[in-house]
Every structure is written in structure tokens, then in C-alpha cells.
Length: 285
Image (cartoon, rainbow, N blue to C red; front, top):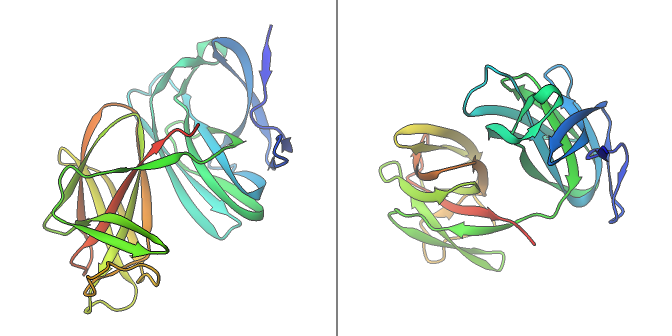
């Protein structure tokens, strides 16, 4: 007997009273996992963005999966741009492998599912999903409400110095990165890490400034992320009045398997240093 599982519903209504309205056509895809089921997904291509409407405040979970073709081997990457109310954008970069559990019709294959959490502010909002790149030129999306998971701190395995950031009734330890002194963290996957960054202004730096964080493993560049930033009006480094932290910028990295030693390097800035903080995602109860 077939079990019909509708992950996306037009005007999906949950017990909490919220709903996610998918404004673009969806398709039913046979995906077999333990029992045969049919999953309703939104099909994202470069020619056909996906739109949803959702009311906040809440969190939604965006699941994504790519169809897997016979010529695809090893790790595959895809990138989705999420636009909020035609005003704000965020980039969703994912890495995936062929799933060993999920099969479609005639034993067609899919990539392992990947997800992102989106924090929905108060009021009704329109989110548009654009496909930037994917090896199969197609990504399947489904949406559900979710609770944000807990983020716990990762202490670097190698760093030169630390600073105490204070403000907004909290104190945090941040780790200093300079152009001459990379810092390292060691992680075991599967893991989703959040990298928080702040540029350190001194008296010579005026106005908006830029900087780039490069992430390497065994000398291979994994990520190169650039930011433009201003001085924070809330936070400070305690007694270090010679340094003013910038506003916080962040990026995420997902590692599906293996042990990794990541080196973080600083480039592309007039600043003498930035401060970093590392968090890993823990499943909430």
C-alpha cells in the first residue's frame, strides 16, 4: 500500500496555526525509503524560480536534493540564492553525494538531502529561490516549519591571542586572526559550522572597510569570503580602547564526512587583524 507524504502543501496548515504557501507549481516524485512514498516537491531550475509566502515570526526548514545522473561521481556542489521580499539575499551553497537510501522510479538516484534554516521576521514575506548552479540544472525543494538548533562553541586548536567582546549584556571570547598568523580549528563531520567575523578597526581606519577570509585544508582553498563592514556601535573589547570591533558578519560551511583541520587566513584588508568565533550546530530536542 502506498503512503502519500505531502511535504509541501499549497496553503500548508500546521498545528501552530502558521502556513507556507507555495506560489509556483509542484510535482509529485516517487522516492522510496524503507516504504514506498510519494513526495511533493517544488522543482527549481534556472528558468523557473520557486516562490513561497510565509508569515512570521518563525523558522522554516528548506530541504534540497538534486537528481543524480549516471555520469556524476563523488562530491557534487550546487548553489541557490534566496531572496527575501526582493530586498535581501543570501546564498545557499551545498555539497552532496549520491544517496544510498533514496531511489526513484526505475531505481533512479538522488543526492543526499541538504537543508538550511531561514529565520522569518514578523509579518508576511515573499521568498524567491533562484538556481545559480547545479550539475543537473535542477534542484528539488520542500519546506516545513522548524525550531532552530542549538549552536555551541568550537575552540580553535591553534591561535595567537584572544579578545573579550562585551556589549548587549553579554561577553564572548573571540580569536584574533592576522595576515601573518592563521588560526586553525579541528572538526569531525557530519557537521555544520558557523563562522562569525569582525574586523578590528584602529585609529587609522575610517569609514567602511573590507576584508577577506580564506579557508584552506592541506593547502587547498575551500572558501574565499569577502565582507564590507562598519564599526559596531554596541560592542567593544573591554580595556582594549585601541581596537573597535566591526559589526558582525558570518558564513556557514557544511562537511558531510571525515575529519578536517581548517586553516583560516586574512587577506584583502588594510586592517591589522580580524576576530573570529566558531560555532557548531547541535540538534535541538
